[in-house]
Length: 39
Image (cartoon, rainbow, N blue to C red; front, side):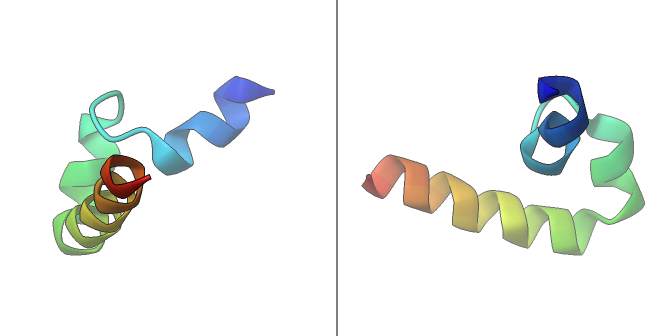
């Protein structure tokens, strides 16, 4: 089950997906990282 939901939040584990949509991925990763660090 984790493998199916992982790619959505996987920042370093999914370089191919990040390269496919760098702008959207970068923004999403930045927001997620900020929330994780803030929490």
